[in-house]
Image (cartoon, rainbow, N blue to C red; front, top):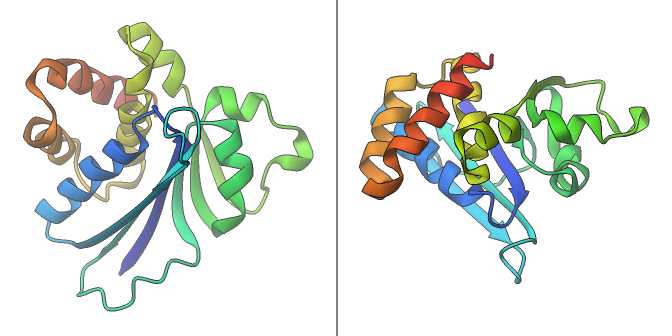
Length: 177
């Protein structure tokens, strides 16, 4: 089983960090993991996306053609990347993004799930943790890893001063689904 996951948004939303946490948790769960990232030259404010490929067997081909799952945190990212979602794939989108799309812009052939990531992050006092909210919602919805594995990845990779906030964001995201 191989799963191609794209996390996308705007620079400064923690897109690259979210992919790192997901990759760490997948690796510790016994998956083979490969990741790539790309972001605009301006970094903050430009488009950003990370791809995580996870497989239960060795990964020999790292060619990414379509996603099995997408986590989207910004409107420009939705418009730019939604075309690479495989038909019937899971697309988890911040609620604000979905509310700003015209009906004809919404993909009908994928399973779209609205996640109030930005709203929940704002309630926690820091908009940057929307990445962890949507990542936790994805984790809970798919079961690809456990919430404990995601928490452990945060404890391993996150700077100590930000751990508690990110762990709270995981709880909020898990409860949102």
